[in-house]
Image (cartoon, rainbow, N blue to C red; front, side, top):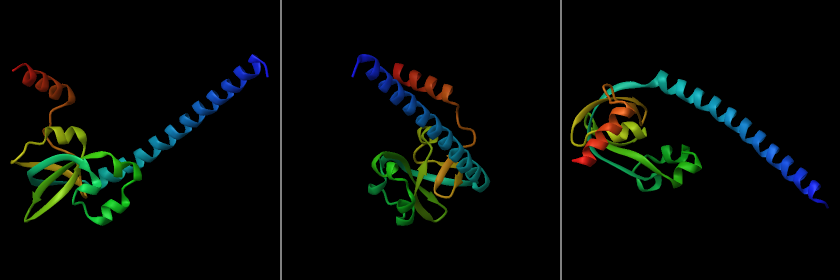
Length: 141
């Protein structure tokens, strides 16, 4: 085997890997769009009292077993932003978007948009730019 053969084999493997990643990315974006449309159809505004918020693994939280069974395997091993909140008379553990999790105040009642056990957004929430600016000001003080 000459060096030209080795370079050709490496080139073919790299092209195949790039093509595979391209089609995998297209499939993931299509699936994400479908899921986002389902979330947009089912979200409701609710008033919740935030008791606690933490990042922990799904197995360590008190999420219902049905929810744990439906989580993709990847999410079982990474830390998720979770919120313990009182919704009416019931205390529940909710999953949350990262940006919303950072903006949620503790020990306060806030209105949020929820889709099942997932907090999608918080009306009146600051943008990413405002949040970064606030963190910089907090670090300086």
